[in-house]
Structure formats: structure tokens, C-alpha cells
Length: 116
Image (cartoon, rainbow, N blue to C red):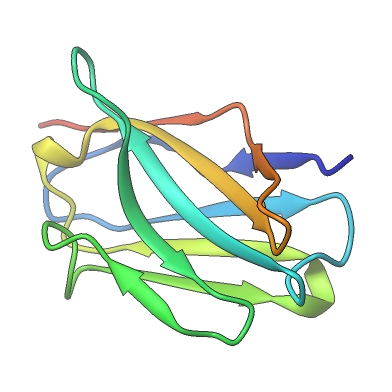
């Protein structure tokens, strides 16, 4: 069983930055593809960014150039650096880990609110 715990959310003003963290319960990044998803009120959950075990990254068009996904193997932690935040980035952000076998694990989510 893998546990994923998000942290770093909160309330920021438009244009500001925030870094989300996702702490994994073990050394999983060599066999897991990791990702950040978000769900805004009244909307479906959507992909924000992913990173493979080999380090290949992928971003939603809406966050390209503003967000950056990374992992720290020594800390068993994944990050999402979010710059130039916009009100439309307001959502609950979820950490997801997908094992090579296809098994998926989700964090419980963390709220990010961008508002003046």
C-alpha cells in the first residue's frame, strides 16, 4: 500500500507563487509515474502535470510555462512549483501515483485558492 500526502496549499493573490509537495510513504519513483491533478468547483478532475520514472514531464496547456513538476528521490517527495497563479487555477489539487502494473494511488487533495 502506498500513501501520498499533499501539502503546501493555501490562499494566494493572482501573480504569486506556491509550491505543492506530495510525500510518498516509500521509495516509489523508480517504478511509478507521478502526477498532479486538480478539480475546480463544479468541474471534473483534470490533469495538470505528470512525470515518468525516467523524468519525462508533460503539462496541460493551461499551465505550460507557469508550472513545473519535479521529484526528489532522496526525500520521496514530488513537487509542483506554480508561478504566476491565476484565479482559474483555484482548485483542489491531488497527487497521483501510478505503478508500472497499472495500480493507481491518490492523495486526499489540498486546496489552492487564488484570489485578490
